[in-house]
Image 1 (tube, rainbow, N blue to C red):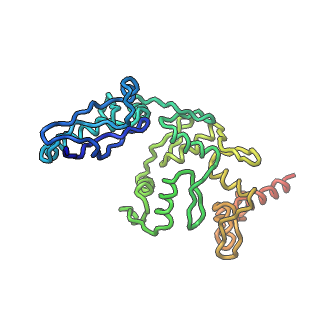
Image 2 (cartoon, one colour):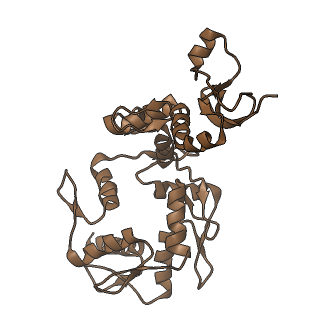
Image 3 (tube, rainbow, N blue to C red):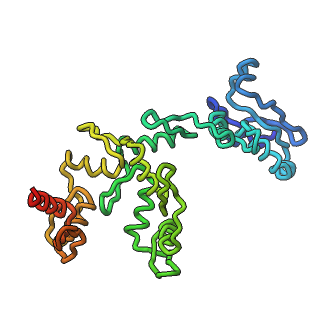
Length: 306
């Protein structure tokens, strides 16, 4: 009975090629078992429907060991037959190669139907669309704050709930949970404001601040409420607004237990428990803890003038 030795083969299923260990071919110690590796198209022409293609492998154990590296290269060339002409990276699927090629060409084939922003990958466009819909599928288990992207939730957990602040400012010794926040903070010491508005030349220390500022000029309101169709300039404003429909109030005052839909509202409320009154009337010496109270007070001066 002929000896049966393992061969490194390719199991072909649709367009996917997976390396497997084949022991189905009988051969003798001196011969090489050779089978031509067929492409899907070649299989259809030749009538070979076996679904298995083999790579030349020596029968004896010593030769098999000596040729392991060569066999591995052959397997790789079959499992990843699509090669980039620019950087020579190889891919299993032609669609993956096409997507990769866009990183070289700069082509952005996916466009947002709301703001016309373009993207290289469809997955990135999908994440971007959440900034318009207000969809926040990633929720923090600790404080229930929700995010549009998983990465944002991860950063939130590290920055807010981990308690770790390994990045320290060399000037004032203030600690930060992430390096990016320290970098932005350092600009408060250096005065650096590298982000400049092309419309009014106003400068900012953070790109996010410039992005929000630009909406003053464009009037863009791309975040729409699904319930009442109101539009907002910022996704966070839409998130807070949605709570007027759901009744959700996740922010609670630790002093009086009053709850609020937005963290900003809670911050303003806390001032009512302190002596802090940062909002001062320019017409008299009155001061208020809330800006809304100051505006209401200003109307009394207008009435006096009538």
